[in-house]
Each structure stands twice: as structure tokens, then as C-alpha cells.
Image (cartoon, rainbow, N blue to C red; front, side, top):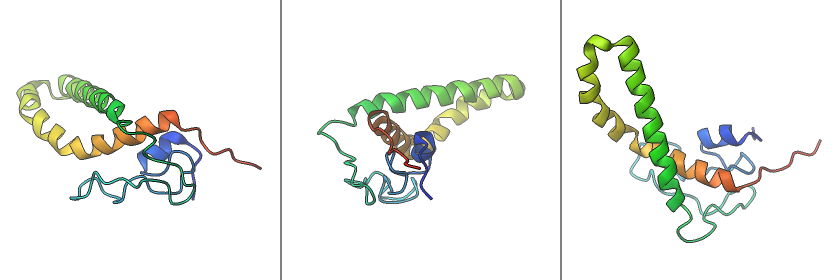
Length: 123
């Protein structure tokens, strides 16, 4: 079922325009081919690579996601696990390494979604 909500489409690996076609080749971010993108949407033919170097801006989106995650992670530790605050320092690096493929994909989908107008639904 197609969603006309860009946020939902970004989160579930769908085309930000039509919500039907897959953005990445694989469904999971945790495969060897986690970074392979489709060149265009199989459903609406939206170009996923508008120009060379387009996804350089996604690096900044990824950085913002990392910072937001670390702040939230830190606040959870400070508010709920204060006696174990030293575990925050030990756990943050492995957690971020494990989340890298997911943030990579999320940043690319988010960056493209900023520049694509959703398909108009005619009723």
C-alpha cells in the first residue's frame, strides 16, 4: 500500500515521491549490499541520483542523526542510569558503529525526500 507521507516513506525504504518503489536494493541495512541504491523508482520512474555528488549533503544529515542520537542516548543514561554513567562511555562507540549502515541509508533517503515533491493524490 502506497503512503503519501514522506516521513513514513523515508523510514520504510520507499520512494519519497510515490511510496511504492524501493529506494535501496536490499530491505535490510545489515547486508553486504547495504549501500546499493536503485537508480530510479520501479513504480514512478523518479530518478534517485539527480546529479553527480548529490548525496554529499547526506553526509551532513548523517552527522545530524548521529549527534541527535548521542544526545538522546546521553540524556537517557543521565536520567535513568546515573550510577552506571561510565557504561555510557564504553557503549557509545559500539552502538554507533552498529547503527552506521542504518544512519547511512536514512540520511540518503531523507536528503532526497527534501528535494522531491510527493505525488498528488487525486480523489
